[in-house]
Length: 266
Image (cartoon, rainbow, N blue to C red; front, side):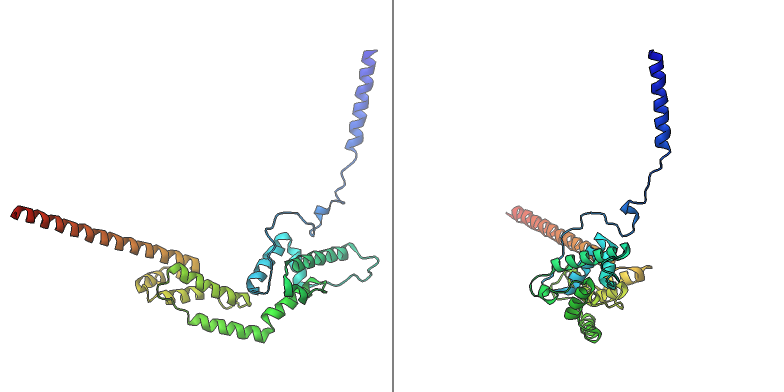
């Protein structure tokens, strides 16, 4: 009797295996297969804008949106067309509406005070972005004029008396950041390096010459040059300290000899 039950159980197990093996898994409903799907990951603190330093905020917001999903930045730049039939939108149209809604919500949440008031009734991300861009950077002619003014300031850039190499570098890169923030593509790293070395030359012309003579000088970034200048500065300071220490030791030795000579005379 026990053997018959075992046999029936085995047959049942065999039939169940065949039944489940015959059904393939359907992946078509998984949203992860859609290239517009989102993964919720930490992106850091939302960059707020209070009307100051638009160039910096613009850069931070672009990075923030792309960090959430590249499609968010794409919808801010390109805009979107509303569904042809709002009552029965396609899946693609719904996705675009969703992206615009997310981008709009992020931009509005990042604005403080008067900046929010400028776009309070706007519900299209591209219009919000364009309004802020036009307000703070102006039309192309105004933007070009601002770039020209900043470039003239860059061409007159010099190191200040008592200023260290790091302080000079920070001041220079702040100016460079403003120029690039207006969309200037002409100011590459090599031009920045040349301005940096010309400004530093009165302080140590030998160091500037050594850097310019390097084989890969044209590929140096401002950070590369700063690193070399700081290294030379530290070496020079160390050499000065050693010289001062040597002079002090020599002075002490002379004092000892003089003291011994006085005692001998007594």
